[in-house]
Image (spheres, helix red, strand yellow):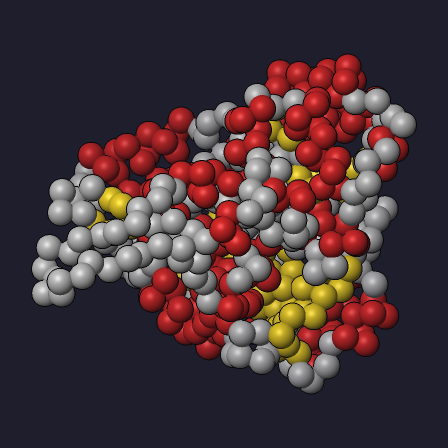
Length: 469
C-alpha cells in the first residue's frame, strides 16, 4: 500500500481508554448511550457510507462507575461514566477503515475474503531467510533515520534500472514504515494548512485522511468506467496557481487502471505550467499487465517536482513487514524527512537488510511474479463474468472492479453486506473511495492476490448462490 491496507488490534484501540486499577488491571469506562445506539455487525452499512463505527470495539468495553485513585488526597472518588470517545475534528469522519470492517465480517461469517488486498500465501524464502540472518547477525537496534545505507543503495539502483534516473541514495531516498507512512510524511512534510491538493477518485482512503491531518483543501476529479480515463478538460479547469500538489496512484487502486503516457505527459505539462508538485504512489509498479509502468519522475522536467513512493509488500507478498520508501530531490526530501523523523524516526532494521536482498532479485523473479498474477487474474475475471458481473478492464494491481447492479441491490454497501452474509464472499464497496459516495454506488472491488483454489472456491460460491434479479 499501498500503497498499504492495515488494521488495528483491539488492544491498540482500547489503550487510550484504559485506567490502571491498584491491582494494575485495566478498567474501561463506558460510552454514552448516544454512541452505543444502533451498533451491530452491519452498523457500517446502515450509517454513513464513508465511515464505519466500532462494533467489536464497543462490545469489548465494559462499564465501570467509580475508580479509586490510590494517590488521591480527595475524600470523594471521581465518577467516570458516560464519556464519549474523543477525536480531533479533522479526523472525526475517519474511523475504522473499510478493510478492517470487511475482514472482521469475513471471519464472523466464514466468508472467503476477496476484499482486503493481502496475499493468503507467503513471500519468497530467500527474502525471509535474509531477515532471519540479519536478526541472528545482531542487526536489531535502531536503524539510521532515513534508512540503512545498503538498503538506500538498493532502492537507488532499482530506481535507476526502472527509470534510467541516477539518484543520490544519501540525499534523495528516505526509508519509511510502509508506503502509508511515506504518504503521511510527504503530506505532513510538504503540505501547509489551506494548500490545495488534487486527488483522482476513487482513491486509497489514506490519502484523504493524511491530507485532512495536514489541513489541506482537497479537490477531486472522478475517473469513470469503463476505462477510468483522466478527464483532461476537467483537470485543466481544476488545476491553477493555487494548486500545491497532485496525487497520482498508478497502477491504480481500486480500479486497476494504469495512467497512459499521454495522460501523464498532459499532467506533467500542467504541473510545470502551474508550478505544482506531484506525489506518486507506485506500490503496484511490478504488477503491470497490459502496458509498461511509467514513473512520473522519469518524464522531462518532472523529477525536480515529484515525490515517488513505493514499498516492498506488494511485490514480495510481505505486506506485514511495512517497508516503504520515498524518492525525491533534496529540496523535497528535506520536508519528507522532517515529518518522518517525528512519525516513526526509523524503520525495522533487520527487515531493511532483508529488503536489500529482495530488491536485488533477478529479473526472473519479477517475470514469474507477473505470470503468476496474470493466471490468478484470468481465473477471477472469467469467473466474475460467468457469474454475471460486468467486469471492467484491469491493467495493473491485483484488483478488479465490477458493476453489481444486475443483482438488484440498491447500492454497493447493500450488495457487499448481502454477498458476505448470504453468499460467503467478501468484496469491498467502492463508494468509500469517493468524496461523493454516489459516484461509486454501482461498483465493488475484488482482489485476486489469493491462491488459485481460494479464487475458484469463491467463484463457485457466487455461481451457486448469487442470482441476477
